[in-house]
Length: 464
Image (cartoon, rainbow, N blue to C red; front, top):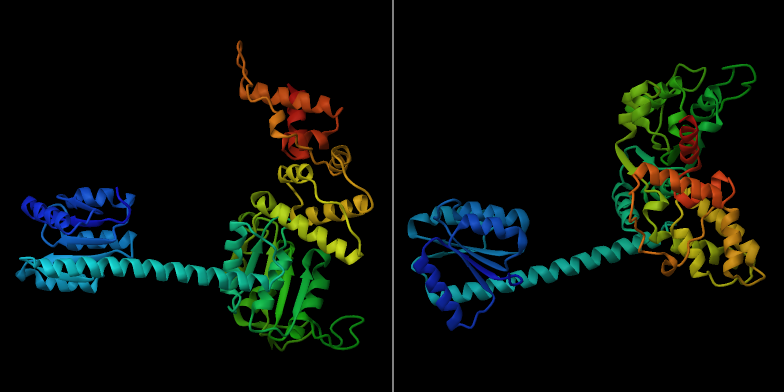
């Protein structure tokens, strides 16, 4: 199928012969003729027409129905309806639904040629405008991204950042989810920096408070509310003004505090300890968790109504292992930043080190990578590296050094008894444990699984 052809859909064979002759006489080569509207629709997903001429009266699907199918897939195709005089009302309705124009039978060849020229010009201009729009949007996105502290070239993470940019101006709560070390607080700070209200960003790590401490810190108290309450305490909600209160580890929030937070989200009101007078708050609540809140809701450990109130906008940060092309970018950023801070020079980052890091699962995510870079700088800032020293460094961090691909034997095969997957798993575990002399952390790194997963398999093996 030619790229972006001119298409004619007409069930009259005499008309198709006329169109073919017309195209040949006018030296139009990129065209396709369909005598069946059903066949055209079945092939439509495989190509995008530049211009389509549709007869209004056809069996299977009429021109109006075919127009709808084209518009479902393609917005740039210029569509012309070919109509008999009695079909003018239908043709006009087609124009209202996205057709460019209509041509009345019998077809005037000059009008038909002009429609082809107009249609191809419309298609080309729309494509150019779309390309320009996409480039401007990409430039605008990159410009916005450069104003944040987020370092990424991962498509998955860029999708997250597009969503962050889209909800930054909202007043509704945001729930940020992701594994430990993925940068949830950094995303919360980015939301704050991009927002219209910047009266303050107040982070609260809920896991660091017991129930009473949390209620006092967040909601405040009045003088005499409890022993030692010698003066009023505003509380973080009162101090935030129209800024942000970032509640980290929201899954650890005690039940009584959940009820109070729900009232804040529902009515924008809270009551300090010891007071009967509710106060208004304009603070925006941003919450984060590495726990599965849906499961906590199912077990009754987290209120369902609070969960849905917090989930007005949900930002899920992918783990580092799912955005491997960020590993080298982040490593070099942390590496150069630390060297500049220390005013020293370090060795070039070896490809062997980077290849091994790209195969590591990084259970601690970006935080683990940053800690690894810090150790790397202090270990090698005054000396050159080699493969042996890099391997010793990797082993210290329970990261399996990866050999060059050329050293792998790709002819792995069995001529006799073919082992099952379970048998191969047992064999690989035995070999890994033997190679590292029983060190489960190193063996797990070699196998690409967690130490807990390896330990579970070893216990199951002993039980047999």
